[in-house]
Length: 170
Ligand code: IMP
Ligand code: MG
Image 1 (cartoon, rainbow, N blue to C red):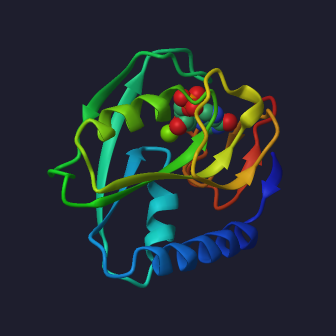
Image 2: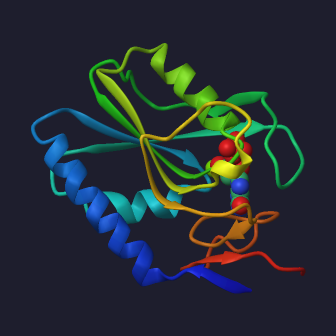
Image 3: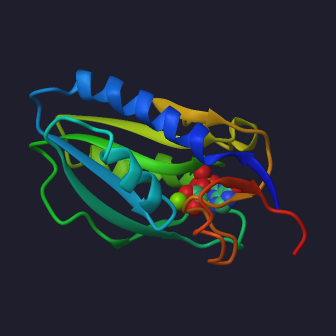
């Protein structure tokens, strides 16, 4: 497996992004939402670098497609455990690939009228986009490669790797 982004590089980008975010939302009711399971490690590391008051919630969605590509049919399997209308919501996502999942999740959450909504994606693969979705911030833009590690899986494996690696033939 070839390392694409190592642990130190990930940590440095998260630290930079979380410091800027902490300045942006200081004094505001802030709720981080992450989409399970891929973003759980990103969420855990990100919020530990946030130094203002915040809360965390999780959702899970399913998108029926094959094991390496989502379909447009995104369904909520686990919903956020509260009313988001009193919060500035920041979605933390592992990767923006085709853009189908985030376009749908953002639509669904906007319908609930949060005070504001932004998306921070650890990784962005703009070359794969099938719609006009653009995350507000992407920590790394990567080429069209299937990657694993740091929460991202292939067939549920490799989430435990502390770095982002390119999946090579198994
Ligand atoms: P979408 O194609 O933008 O809807 O991406 C949906 C989901 O597919 C992401 O949240 C990931 O869970 C998964 N995914 C997309 N690209 C990769 C990849 O390179 N490695 C692992 N998972 C991926
Ligand atoms: Mg995901």
